[in-house]
Image 1 (tube, rainbow, N blue to C red):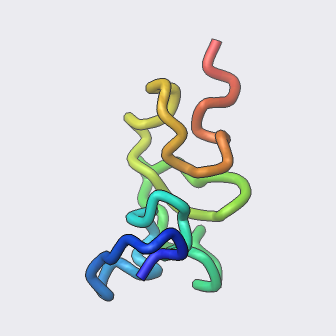
Image 2: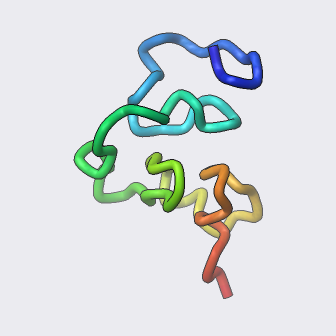
Length: 72
C-alpha cells in the first residue's frame, strides 16, 4: 500500500520505477542506480528510475520535479 492509500502489486515495490504517485514504493530500497537501465532517467530526491521519454513531458513523474528540470 502506498502512503496515500493506493495499492500496487508487491512485485512493483523496489523495482526501480515509481508506481505509487507519492513514490513510497521506491523508498528504503537500497541503491537504485544499479537497477536503472541505459534508457532510464534517475530521479534526484527519491532515487527512482523513470522511462527517459517521460523527462520534460510536463508531468512530475519523479515526485521531486527533477524530471522536469533543465528542459529548455
